[in-house]
Structure formats: structure tokens, C-alpha cells
View 1: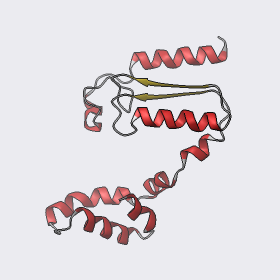
View 2: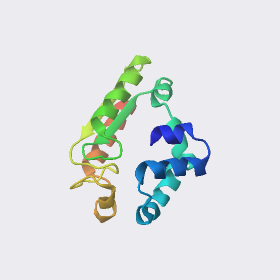
View 3: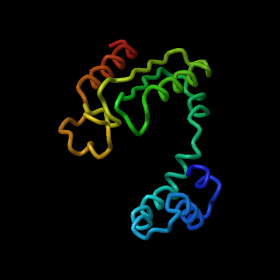
Length: 145
């Protein structure tokens, strides 16, 4: 899917190739269900997201960094992404890097049961107090207040 989007600049052609990949039997119900997802996949935002190379951007960051991720984040899995972030920052000479995986939190830093995006709107908590406290403590430590 990623290769199709990156290698096919024409949106209509990319959608057709995606449809052939995900709907080889050309089922009309599947086609209707997938079309809106394919439209998102070929959007300028998504194409930009796929073209992004975070390590190159992180190499330019030389200020203290606090990188957080929730253990139940299904959109940006914390363990691998936090490790890669730390490696990229430190390789560029940034030695003030703090990474922390927060147990039980989803992509929005809410206490979650599953981490599924479908769950976001059903959780009453806006932002986990433990995450807020961690951020507060880190900022206070790094501003010497």
C-alpha cells in the first residue's frame, strides 16, 4: 500500500491500484467501503506523512526533548518509536533526551482499555493526570523552577 501511494503520483491511478490490491474480486460492497479510505490515503496530508523522514528532522533538534508514548497507542507504537527517536536525537549530538512509555495510555494519552481509535470518544478522561504530572515535572526540572 505504501509503495503504491509513494510511486503513483496520480490519485485516480493510485486508488485503482489500491482497489485491485484490496479488492481483487471487484466486490461492489468492498469497493464502496474502501473508497473513502483510499481517498484519505492519496490525500496531500497522507502523502506528506509518508514522505516524512523523522530521523532527518530529529537530527536538527538540539534542545532538551521529552518524548512520550502510550503503551496502548495503536497508531504510533510507543516502544519502537521512542527508541528510534532517542537514537536519532543522540546520534545528532543531543544528550538531553528523555523518553517514557506510559502504561495503559492510548494515542491521545487517555487511560484506555484497548487503545483502539474507536474508543477515543467513549473515554471520559481528556488527558491522563499521570501524563500531565510527568510533563509538568520535566518542564519544571528543565526550566529550574
